[in-house]
Image (cartoon, rainbow, N blue to C red; front, side):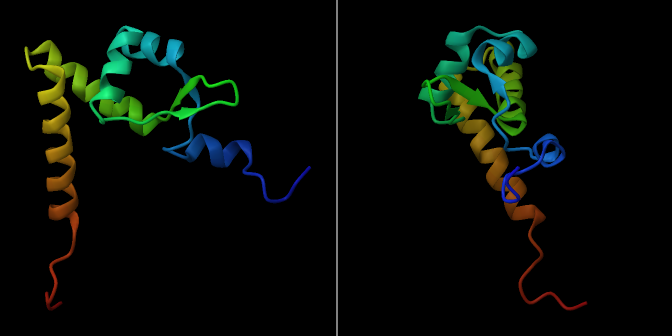
Length: 104
């Protein structure tokens, strides 16, 4: 067994490990496979590809897809939902950063 390969425990904890096939991801999220492809086309998620070319999704990507589904279910177009999520991510990144020059 190679020492450099990540172990099962590391893969379970890795939010970005592409563990889910498209079919399984769609089933878990209760969406269609074309919906997942539309999120990819809009640039919201970029699944990795297996050696055979099949899409593989991470937990982080599935959470983003879940948020997109919530917005679409409320009547937001897919492209607008993807833009909203990107802006939410940017805002979270900005507000989670410690202020420069802050004294403590």
